[in-house]
Structures are given as structure tokens and as C-alpha cells.
Length: 338
Image 1 (spheres, one colour):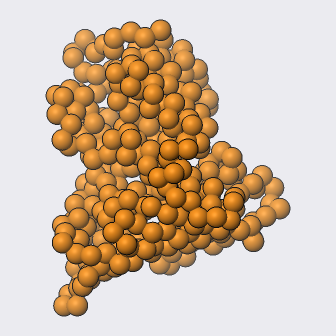
Image 2: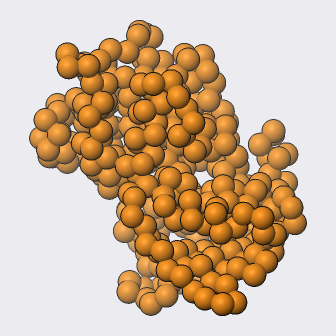
């Protein structure tokens, strides 16, 4: 039943976390740095994990997320569970009167993504999708460096080992590596350069096929064309091993400039010099601060990605999966509208 959200006795916004894994803990750490938030509930199907994070936050632990919504009545819900659970949990949270911080990917189908958006609009609530890299200092510096320059080429790669999150061993649970990881680089490209218009992808099962519990592609290649004419590629694999040096980056080549993202470091290379910039702001904290500030003040100027924009990033990665299935390029605009 929909009801107006409430604050705690000290005026802080009451929050709850669904999923006490890696990203749930990251958002919990961010929430602890925001005086306007009080996390009152933590839910996880692993009772011990829920209880441990709840104890750290002075919150109540739950194994049933619906019960948590009824008891805690949060203003803000963090949905950090696996993607197949996102739609049901996000929609129920929105219907309960809460705003939602939703981990990427939004969902594994465009239909579910649209259902979440419709629920937000119906209830007058907001959804912040965690494309947090837009909020880092490196994104600021990259935008400054690219200002006024024509971009020619983008190349993203990551060579890594079998996923350390068991759910991502199954592509029906995690979506595959382009959806699980490549979404971050593709969202950065959209933020820094412009829309991805066309995507063509082929995936393979070359090394890990047949291993127990493995149901995923282990090698991925995608090409795309962006508005303005820039072209790009992405090459990723699960078939490598831990500790492989120089195993991933995002390169952006523009007129007289190479930008290279290495995790929390950005290299800006021009014909005359190379500068290295380190990330000095936790992007997850910055995202949370911007979203909570907007909810409290009504000033949305600090929010760098709105839900409709996040849906377009989702369309790019799900479009890549569709292209792999059909063997045909996907026009992203048509895929969004389908």
C-alpha cells in the first residue's frame, strides 16, 4: 500500500538496504558519511550477512525484504540484489512510497526497465541508477580535456578470471560480461562523447565451457558507432587469470589527445606531455551525496544521470546481447522503442 515516506525522529531520512553483499556494503559506507541519512534496515537471504551489516549500522536485520519495507517504512531503498530481482524489489519499494538507489544493470530485459520507470512516475518517486563513474573526478577531468575536440576512436578491454561473484557464472542471472562490467565503460562513453547509435557483438564459449556451474560466455567482442561519427570496440574475457598485468583500460582517442582510464587513474596524453590524474573522490559516495541532496533540497543540478538516461545505457548492453543472438547489428534507438 502506498503511503507518504517518513523521517526518523532527528529529521534524518530513513533508508533500507536490500542485499548485504559487496555493493550493499559500498552504499552502506557511503550512507554513513551522509548526515541526512539513517539506515534502519538491512535485508539479505543470508541471515548472518544481513545481521553483520545491520550491526555495523545500528540497524535491524531482515531476511524478508517485504517485511523490512513494512517495518522500517524507508524514504530511500538501496536495491543491490542480483539483477533478476531488481524489478520486483524496486517496484515494491516505489509503491511503498520510497525513492530507490538501484544497482546496475537496471534489469535483464527492457520490459522490466520500463516497468520500473512507470512505477516511479506513477508514485512520484525517483530512481537513481548506479552508473557511479560519472561522479568521479576523473570524469570531470576527461570532459574538460575533451571539450572542443573531435573524438575518432574508443577502445575498451578487460581480461579477467572466472567471476568472483557466483551469480555471474550464469548469464541468465548476471547478463554476461558486457552487461555486468562493460556497462560502466559504455556509460562513460555516452557521458563523455554522445549516444551509441549502433552495436554489433559476437560472443564465444572457448575455455570455460563444460565447467561445473558455468553457464556463460567467456569471450566477448563488440563494435559500435556513436553520434558524431566516432567508432568503438570492446573486447572482454573471463578466460584469463588473476594478477594479469595491464589487463584492462578504456582508451578515447580524440584530436591531439589520448585519454586512458586505468581503474582509479586517468592518463591524458598529448604530443607534448603525459599527465596522470588519480581519483580523489569516491564516486559511490558522490552519487549518494548528490541524490540525497536533491531529495532534500529539490535542487537536481548535481545529479548526473536520470532514470531515462540510464535506460539508454541499459539498451546499449542488452542490444549487444541481442546482436550476439541474432548475428545482426542493433540500432539502439529502435531497441529502446521496441
